[in-house]
Image 1: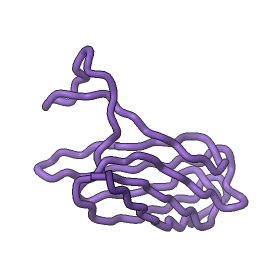
Image 2 (image 1 turned 60 degrees about the vertical axis):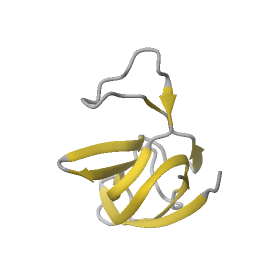
Image 3 (image 1 turned 120 degrees about the horizontal axis):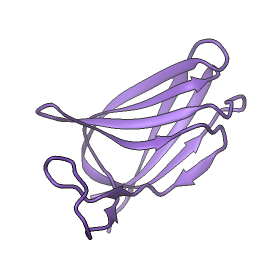
Image 4 (image 1 turned 60 degrees about the horizontal axis):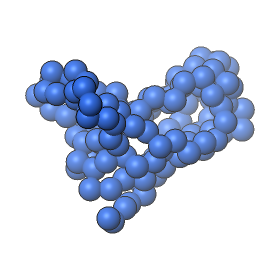
Length: 123
């Protein structure tokens, strides 16, 4: 399986503890294998990172959330297998979330500074 690394920078601006920022990008359908967040040196433990995508036709999903931390970390996100209505299918387990369409990485409740988000993705 071929994998790629997408690197995105998010600049948060605003008052300490309430700075916010986002970056947007378009992605062809890929699965997120890993998310590595490099928090800047003064990011407080209240920092939230959210990755969401607009798949088109009014379908929007949050595909990754990391709440209340300022510590660099690699996450291996998993989501339940769902039906067309978004309900978990019993007995189907979990899978890597899909990144597709117009996507946004948002930083909330932080201090001003730059964050580097690396997404390890595979088709």
